[in-house]
Length: 306
Image 1 (cartoon, rainbow, N blue to C red):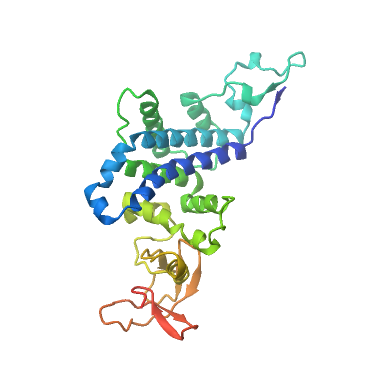
Image 2: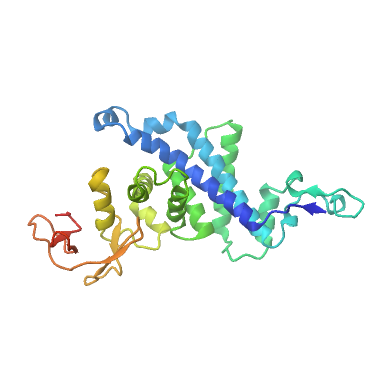
């Protein structure tokens, strides 16, 4: 008998872990760089930092490939994990006279065999030519990273886009940010500094993704239209400004995005709240989305925050 057979959930969890670490490796490079003041950043441009961290990029490529393979295995497992075994059927330890074998001790398929099996089982996923080309691209980049015979040739912004593509292909829009936020929340150390601030700091993931690929491309991975006019979120702004730093990121959007809409949704904290559609009284500001702060009995413009 083949014992301890994995479930689709087991492989799916590994997929999430690999995608998260592939993203976080690059995010950490960016985060460390942002810790230096503007004068230093002028002397040392970001492209030099990426060149220095070429090994980190290679590791991220390998993790992305591992995520793609484990996701394909999770899909195959929904039919049967036995389809992943590379041994010939007549060599399986399934007859009563043979000793039981743990699934993890057996060789499993990979590469073209895995891809063919992935395409051959029933799946809710739309397995089209675009997805197959993406999987092949990830495989080729991984081979370059592993063998080291030639440079990988993938830029960090392209790699980040591929990581977000993998999240979206496999788990749908918004999944990359929701999972990274949940990963942060599950950290055993989460909340020991300040629960509200640590929860709100996920806006830095959004800022990083925008910095790397631009808001127009980032928009492809979200259900909310990120290319529409953005506003300050009252909750995120107050939380960060009060005790941590000055927040200048805007990740709140009208829902629906219409001239008379009175509802605002924040991608970062997932909050929705009512707004007032009146012109800002600051002459230089063209904003017309205000929030009524009952504590100070004043309206706050969510465009200029005055």
